[in-house]
Length: 220
Image (cartoon, rainbow, N blue to C red; front, side, top):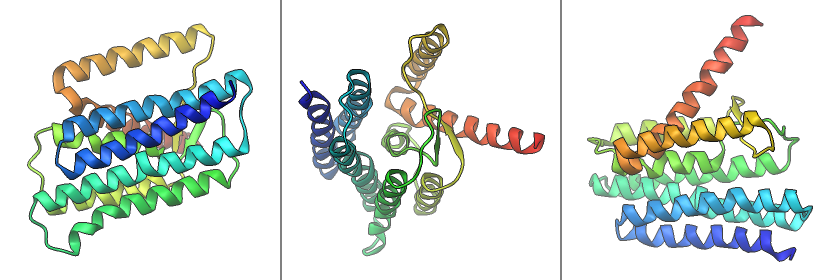
């Protein structure tokens, strides 16, 4: 049964590969669904491994490799596709893959440093992928400067020292209430904005984290 977490991790990687195919044919709807499912598998592979005591160094390395595909290469390919649709000339279209490089660097840094169980330092790669995958569904009038600003800002957030809340399932009233509140917020945003909700929800997550940093810094 110890193969279950690694199977979930491979499912994450497979969905990332599928997302890349659909991005290549500009089917952002299906690509979004693939990324959402990859995020679910990424969450539960670790949850199952920790709950059942099946964690291993191999599993951790496999998880990072899968994350590079689903949450590193995918948003890089997405932004590159966005620049292509804006008729940006080569080689400038490849600037979208700056996100891929920033994501790979962030994952390597995460794997080689001590990590807190209650927070992340830097924007998690799955959150960044969700932020970007929702952009095509917001109906924005995208421009080259707008996309480039987004690339620079999110690449910085990935490798910043900013504190981001780390959500973990726990058998407590607080955890249950938090899950319900998050689900209600996501449901409201999804009803109102469709798949654009993923960008908006991560934007709220980032803003709350920045606000927390400012408040705690002012108190100190």
